[in-house]
Length: 388
Image (cartoon, rainbow, N blue to C red; front, side):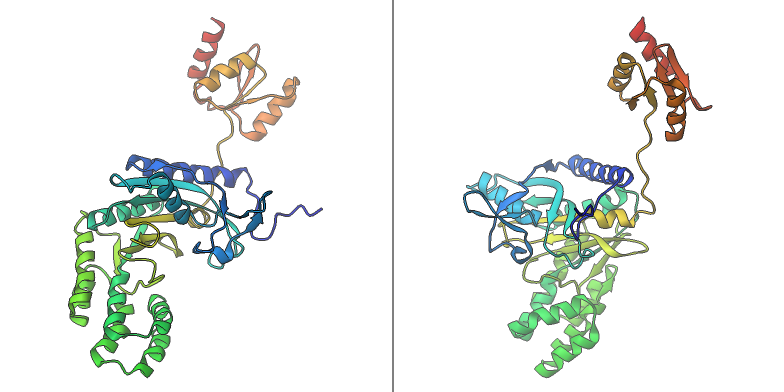
């Protein structure tokens, strides 16, 4: 029997598991403080050929022959939750948050991981610059909350889409050109555009889009480069979003953000931190793709943990106890108490010292094992209360 987990999955020992739990708890608390309510969706779903990652879903057959699949995408699952629970439409803005595992047969952009975790949120039933800015605020705060310095890149795929429409770019070329713009690959972009013999101003604008990156001055450059009403509207929306921020120091504009051009309908963003080249989270507005008005983002937990300078484990319990009554009292007050599994006191002392446990609780009393004696008076008062 193989003891190793299946390819693309992994075990997590206590230290990593504790770090994962802390990160998820921190993000959940942040989202909750902004009014996002927690929801859960099933791990097991009916297989849907219309699912955006249907080809990469793990499929299985239920006992009645129904074709099922492991959850492969939260946004799609939450859209079903909303359509099922609000068949008449949303009564107003709906803020939802989620966390959990996803499974795909192959995920090439996450180190070929088949099992991974996302923590994210959706803001549904509302649109506009203020709603888009709320998500970008939260994306920035999510990175900061786990102890990293955020840098958020904001784009509007509508700018590129309008250029495509003005240039009457053949549909078959739109994906490759969008990818070249998004990757900031001028060589490929030029090779794709040259045979089309576009009007010189449109070709010049398309070739320059990857360079429209930086602070708010980028919008002025974009207006000069693409002075058409269609592209100006995309710039004006970005400008309105930026006006919702008192501090824009960690925000950058990227008008060449064109990934998944057919899916994202409005503002799109990614959050990074310094000295880590991959995005920690990504999202944007996708009105009409799954729900009439919807936007959100997801944090890749594994990538987030990789960006942290070090993964520290949970502190050891404070007390090792042979006294069950005293241990219950201490646990009830929030202290971590490990139950001793041996009655040999010298053995317990050695074990506790090796684990970094500060106290040994015996029926005779509380015995300090370290010179520091953390919280000694508080522990003693609680234990004396038990026996008093």
